[in-house]
Length: 134
Image (cartoon, rainbow, N blue to C red; front, side, top):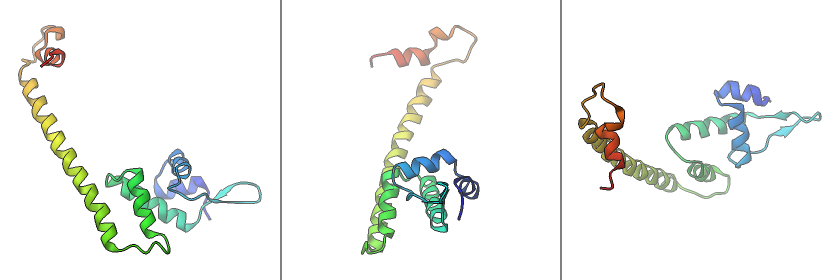
C-alpha cells in the first residue's frame, strides 16, 4: 500500500494531478485506513503509469477514459477497438500538424517583413500585419 505522496514519487506525478485524476474519475478512489488516510494499491500505480504514458502520447482525458474502458473486465472489446481509437488520435494529430505547418509558414512570411533593426517596435511590419484586416 502506498500513500499519495509515495505514489507521486514512484510515478513522478504531481500530487495535485493525482487528486485531479481521482476527481474526474480516471483514477478510482483509494481505500482508506481506519484513521482516514488514503492508501493506493499496485493497481493504482499501474493505472497512473498508464495515464501518464497516454498523456505523453497526446491522448486527451476523454480518450484515456475510452482506452481504460477497453481494459475493464467484461468489456468484451477487441484489439480492433483499441486500434480504432488510436487511429482516430493519429488522424487528429495529422490535422494539428497541418495547422501548425500553416501557422509556421505564415509566421515565416510576416517575420521576413521585419528588418530586426533598432527602430520603434510600434512601426514593426510584423505587428502591423497583425492589426491588418486582410
